[in-house]
Length: 249
Image 1 (cartoon, one colour):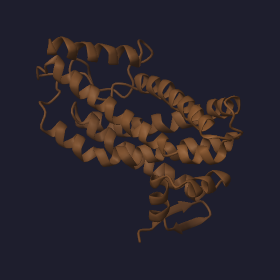
Image 2 (spheres, rainbow, N blue to C red; image 1 turned 180 degrees about the vertical axis):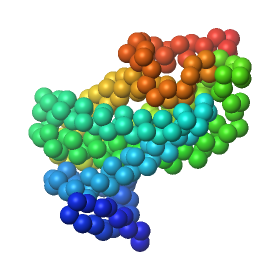
Image 3 (cartoon, rainbow, N blue to C red; image 1 turned 90 degrees about the vertical axis):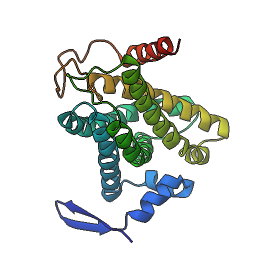
């Protein structure tokens, strides 16, 4: 059995993380409910390790198409976006849940969202070898290379689809937990949809501010651009889809 060593200020804490992570990824409601009932630093540390590792690996594979330095930047930015989205949506979701019929506190809301993003990061980490293989076999996205617009749009939309799949799959794992906490299945589904919408709007705009993940061949590699607050994520996705449709025609 694998063990995870976590260095803490009071000393080293050793615990078996493999089984806990496996039970979380299977979405076992009794296990998930036990997690949100208690605030345990070692469980929080496990979630952060998985988020940083899984999302970081996928971010590195995503950014490498532009430049190795871009891969490093995205490996830092992607986990940062997930953690910021978790903190930002915890308060919103804690307010939405009682309005929709689920009596849940801020701590439980935060831990449930953190678990869902931990699952999503694990899924993204599993996709990173496939993404890296596709990027490795694609034409390099450099200033000297002429990349067809449809190729750029297709890879951009591929990343959006994979990230959306990971997020939805992770949140669907929580439906059994929400059914246990809620009065009925209708309330659980209503809360899940509200949480998904909040994660989508907040997370996607954060990803736009910290863009570009893929990078642009016409612009230098930077961690944060001066034009970060201009435009929005949905406009970019619409233009990519429109370019693909024009190419098909």
